[in-house]
Length: 219
Length: 74
Image (tube, rainbow over all chains, first blue to last red; front, side, top):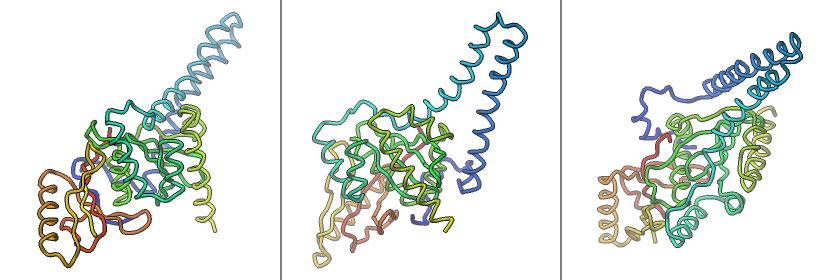
């Protein structure tokens, strides 16, 4: 990745620039928040059942809350790469995908054709870039950060929308992660369950690449 | 042959094409590039695998210069 800052950073000058430490802290905060949501509901459900077995329905409802809340967060994360209705003409889509194909290698091109997402290796991990968001699979492949980020022109074809994000990411990865809005950070398996089936191979490919990054870092 | 393209609603539009030994074409490309900057586009060139750079002047030696719009958090 290049070292020049993204000009878009000026629009979010109050945000601290994302770095490894900040990503780790964000991950820890999300884990703590999820735990804070889940543990009380599990505890309340178990306690209610222990005190009064007839309160089983209420206990089950409490356990359901413990399950549903993290799932809703994960859904929010997966939504950043959920395919949206295409507004551009078919010919424009074809042309834009051709340009995008020129910017990426064969493997990424093939993965995009199957999943609609472009895999890009970065310093923070492995990115999956979609038309209106990006997933960052951290080294090791177990955690995913989901970012909502887009180009502000709804008429652009999807290939161009991805190319905009890809070029920005390649220019300044830290700036890209700073400009983007974090929608979710959590376990890969949670996000995977909420992705469209067609997109899941992209997350699996990114996880494989992220595990390789982790091995390289440890070597 | 170098190209200046803009990503837009048609997929992309070629704004200029030039070769280094054609000063008139280079000048036209530089004007087209500056006009796009005025409209709020950023000039981008690929600088290797997984790398890109924002340019403020037309790099006349580049094969492909792409104009992109600003991005923002959604």
